[in-house]
Amino acid sequence: MISSNEKTIFGKVAYLICEEILKGNYNEEDRIPGVRDLAATYEINYNTVIRAMEVLQREEIVYQKRGIGYFVCTDAKKRLRKAQREEFMQKTLPEIFRQARLLDIGLDAITEAWEKTK
Amino acid sequence: MISSNEKTIFGKVAYLICEEILKGNYNEEDRIPGVRDLAATYEINYNTVIRAMEVLQREEIVYQKRGIGYFVCTDAKKRLRKAQREEFMQKTLPEIFRQARLLDIGLDAITEAWEKTK
DNA sequence: CATAGTGTCATAGTTAAATATGACGGTACA
DNA sequence: TGTACCGTCATATTTAACTATGACACTATG
Image 1 (cartoon, rainbow over the protein chains, first blue to last red):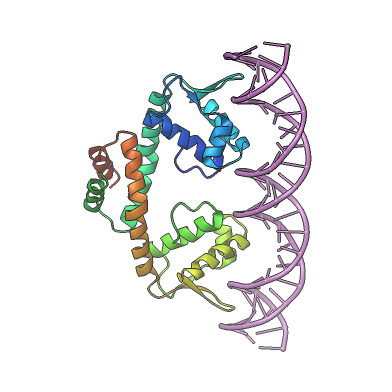
Image 2 (image 1 turned 90 degrees about the vertical axis):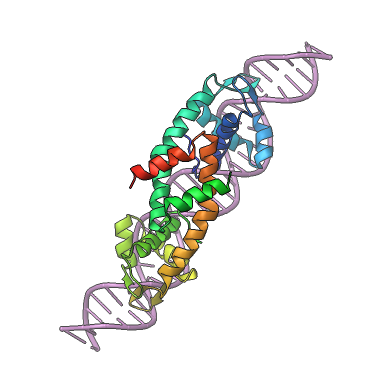
């Protein structure tokens, strides 16, 4: 799965594209901006974007039409949501809670922060 | 500050040593295991440990006695706690909450997860 | 004072990631 | 049919991190 903690640039870009899909900015069967566009947007080399796309294709988030571009797979959003929710609940949150307890930060402080960032 | 998201090995080791201090496994004015020991523990090269120590010295978490080893600074735990709590509340938590909202995960699910990991 | 244990430093080599660049094949459309 | 825009691929280069190794200086201690 593509997580929010990717260390490489192409991994981060893959994650950012997933976020756009989750946000509804790229909808199913929509064309995604071209590799040269994305490279300009993120100020990176387009080869790096291609690597991000390879990741997304492997995960069946996007598919490719020759000579045209990349498109968001059907159900990509739904599957992404499911996978990322699981990742979040099973990995991300427990680690955050472990850190919180190490720092003597309790549920009350967390709840309060939640309300503040609403 | 040394965060839990360090990408390099020496950054991660620096963070792990901070955790040991927070947990009370390395107390103030205690000697920290030698660079060659730590290298064996973490299965890395001892030059990499030295780099972690440089970070920790710069942050005044540890200091060094020539020919003897590294020691935990006075008040290191207290200062670490303060700095990491701030980082956690101002950076880590807001980002986690942003992700949670993107995934339609609410405060109730977070609260429930907190109780479960007790 | 010899020796073993500390950290230190310099050098060289390896690896993975990212960049830069040019050439190429498929598609759309005027 | 030619031109512009897609993605693709190969190659070379650069950079940062990490590893490997050997030599060295300081400290404690028998």
